[in-house]
Image (cartoon, rainbow, N blue to C red; front, side, top):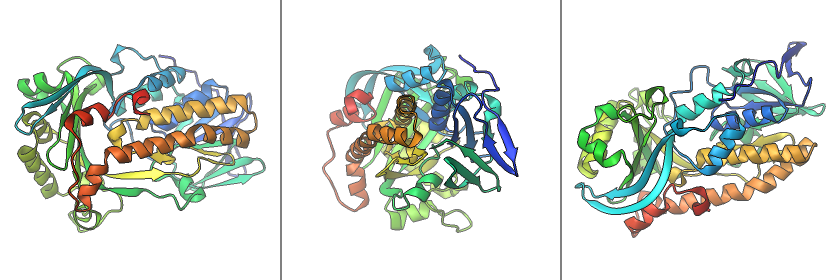
Length: 422
């Protein structure tokens, strides 16, 4: 794994304000230190930019997130970002299987894929980026252009200036909220229950049935899928891996979702609730429903997952990705429902397109216009495809009873390689 040395960028302070040193190259500030931000930062660093990352979360991020569907484009971006892509990048499967609630096999599809984990990729990208240039506990407050640079003001009162700001600050992007306040997350009408369970905790029967495959189960009006991912210490050794699952369930906003988002003290959270605050009776009901509705192997995974949580599903569909010297990247620009399995790959391709545009066009605003021209339509296509794949779930949340797509179609379309999807 390539580990660039420190000293590529420096922080100088003048009059109580911080500025990225531009000695030896132009300065970029990346807001957001998750996968998209780290990909952009590592690529910019290797293109000669002076780069710093400002991450809002003060604590460790490595344990967050869950499974990642990989694509060839993601591997290409990781290599250019300084990551060695070896056999331990993920767990390989050779086929897909759809199971009935009673455990019968309903359909099979040969499709080789490599499945990874958010924490694994984050650790690799963090190792490729200089430690001193990744700052945490910095929550962006606003951005403004001053004297040909962008001034980023943070909630702690600090200010940093750069020639370019890459806003990779996710679905609740502060930068998007400032420059495009009309673009807001739109609730899709359903939630995804998620979890990771240690392979060693699962029964031999479940492991034999589901670990070699990408699995599906479709009880009426719901979608369950799961696959193996690297385990603790990023291990891909059989017996030390984890099983990742995503279980989509309709949750009308004014009834079910409001209850799900209410904690034990009666506080109703907006958009998402911290997993530790999900009420015990909500978790117990989900486990009971899993035992009643899902194939035995999936029900076992839900029952044995210690950190069971849910995420409301949203769309974000931006009309622009470039605002002068500010670029939106990844989920800050577009959030597609997870059915496409392309969130991280989309961010990786955004980062590649951004660096390539900056290499061709020395003027930053002109380069960002080029970047937007390359990626805006792609983001819209990904969001549109994800909406189509989740249309029946959304209709159920509206009280409709749509015809369910054939199970063979579902397993052939969900989270398939990017080239086939688009």
